[in-house]
Length: 256
Image (spheres, rainbow, N blue to C red):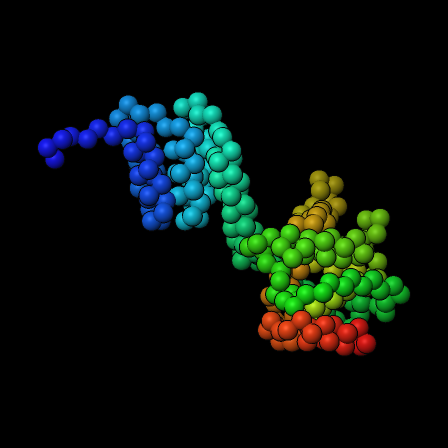
């Protein structure tokens, strides 16, 4: 109290970082907003700390606003700011996708005896893994455990020249677990989303993202083996087992 302390940029940046570490993103933004009134111009370090504070508490909308706001102060971004922005975009993508899946009102179609003719062609993909289908996580992204390769392979097996032949099957055996698909899955991946001006039906494009999210929804559905064009098989009840047991279960599936 005897020696008044005048805040400077270093002190403000340190305070914003401290708020981020304590999950006080609102205080971080308040400190950032107060800096111009104190005659202090924020820099890339300031914005990096504030953006990370928002990212840690899943406030990615605020973080994106900061990315736009920093141009008002002609802040030159550096590598750390780019990395912080990347983390924000990744977190935003996961949250938006999870919200879209939670709010999906369209029910998955159920299997019936006339919907899938006998298979004339069956593709199989094999992946050695102890975790099985538990190794796939939307939060971590499909690059985790290379599920992107598995899903992309399944999609290419089913969709031929833009068509989804009903008599084509594709299976992925991942450790002790498996997912089996047929061309009938097209109705799940490409639902009608409207009509054109001349009355023709308009379908959702068969993008990798649409295919990935349809499979995720089917995996979480109950029962998971009653979905049109898609069925899941959990060989060991979903528990992580030893590599030898996972390998033995995969061989058993192949024999069947």
